Length: 163
Image (cartoon, rainbow, N blue to C red):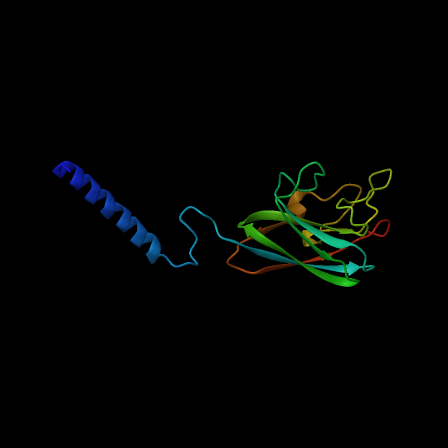
């Protein structure tokens, strides 16, 4: 080996050792540089009329809220219990969102609607945003989420025609 090759190999070894020691020194709980923190959002859904199917919760961005053709990026479900069901939506990054909830009482994974688009299963939105002929606007249901602070939403399930 030439002295130049030895110097390059030694420099590469020292560089990899220093990078390894830097990553080793970081605590496991700290997010990687550039990565954002994530956390769960707990949603307590109440006014459930009967224990049938699942309560489905979606945490939506402005672009996906109340749009049947777009999937909300964060979601979870739990078996429906008469009265109250708690659903925890995991791994949500910091941001501004709105929650949509419905009782999928026939477990078809879609909100059933009548001929005029009226929901045939219970529905609800964060901030208890009012439901009329159309879903509420995003701003009415929006909330800020910071994973460093636990968040528990309480959403009333409403049924047509008695919304």
